[in-house]
Amino acid sequence: MNQPLKHDPDALPKPIFPSWVFDHQTPDCLEDAAFSSGAALSLLHVLLNDPNNSVPVELLRSRLSLRAAVHCSKIEGRGVTEADIRDAYLLTLPGDVMGPDGDLLAFWRTGTAISLRHSRFHDRLQTLLPEDMQEYLPDWSARAEEARSSPVAKSVSVLTSVFQAFPRQEAIALLCADVILARSFGWDRPLPLFGLYVNRKTLRAASEGEDVRVACYIAIARAAQDAVRLAHDLARRAARLRAVAPKLRSKGSAEAVQLFLSEDAVLPSTMLSPTIRGSSATMTARSARRFCERLIELGVVRELTGRATFRLYGVA
Amino acid sequence: MVAARKQGHELEVLDLELDDLPDELRWREWMNRIEAVIFASSKPIEREALLLVVGKGANIDLLIDDIQADLRAKPYEIVPVAGGWMFRTRSHYATAIRTAADVGEQSHNFSEEEMGVLCAVAYHQPIDRAGLADIFGKEINRDLLSRLRYKGLIGNGPKSPRPGAPHTFVTTTEFLATFDLRSLRDLPDLQINEQLETGVL
Image 1: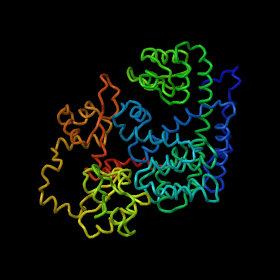
Image 2 (image 1 turned 60 degrees about the vertical axis):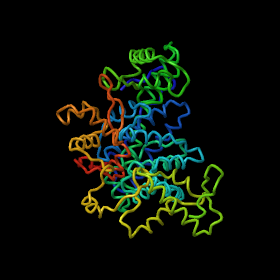
Image 3 (image 1 turned 90 degrees about the vertical axis):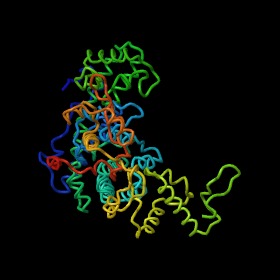
Image 4 (image 1 turned 135 degrees about the vertical axis):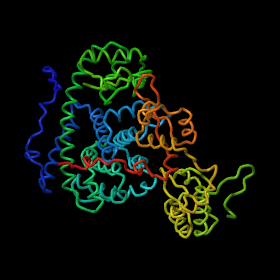
């Protein structure tokens, strides 16, 4: 773990995830499980709404989307690694096909990029669903949102509805649950949480009409715990990157730093040059590569693949 | 199908709303259009395409349900494939069709090797030629891969992060349709890792 910079006024307090959230053991009754998930989610909620914006939320979302893709790949029986999924997603040329691994990451990234503030967010979610599922979505989500129950229970309701009707659409059921959760909390965009830990066993039980609330509460508590720890960790790393940013003299460096603060992995040859993604600033291929090497020298970015070519960089 | 099209001067304009027809006939006409569109295509037809031939108030799913009901006694049906719909003979008649075997040009006559490569791509995608060579213990002929690509069953996937950056191969929606799969998950399981079942706890 990197030490937070002592002089940094924006540094968050020490990462604290109080042990009483889980009370040293896995809760097995509804009450304990619900308590754990509620406690963990409130800690996460505070971090996501930090007035100092210390947590790079987009980066957090990007990392968690990758983890959700890995988790879903496991559920679907492909079981590929983070590295496989990153490669499939980032190394596909426009017009070519990403294949199942890249598609899964694209699914989570697109799904969690949907702005829930937008009144037509349902339509955008709907377009991610296969034809035969689309017409049911409004009903599923209306039923969940009208339920008089806790946020997590509402999400479990939508998860169960989706999965009972379409028992092979795990990723979609999990994303819908995460969308409803984010809606309940008033978040701008969904964060992959159900997509991190709800496993095949729980999903199967849901499809058979069992009450899976305990399993889901626990899964959500774990996911929120991971997200809280990751958020603290990324906040510290982001602070280090922001601290060195003024030293970077190359053209477009501000925009490039911003990209590193929102993307899990950066492929310089497409994401920094010819234009820096998400901006109109330009960089040549050579200066993009040198920029990344410079960030490594400064210890704020690391190379993720260990390869000599197609190197990917991410906040360290 | 009398009022199916209004005669334009040069262009035939499709009357979507069919306001001049009584409800029942209008519905029947919409059903027929959808059936015709799906019938005429060898590829799955997506919802957006079907919405172009019916009126605003029409529910595609209900229309297809009604078509299905009419087809109940027929040896073929409409099935959802790869995000759209297409016609399929019922699997019960597979043997009869195979016996008649006169499917000639239309069928993909795969050689054993082509079938092997296609399977390898399906299960190991994205995979490049070097990866295929590892599986088969020999180089895979470029022509063979081109044939599969020409048939629309495989396409270019992500670049492989190796020297020379060869592209990988992935299967296409045409592949799913050809083998009657709704998604890659319907491929027969080669190995199910039971460890994956172990839970959250």
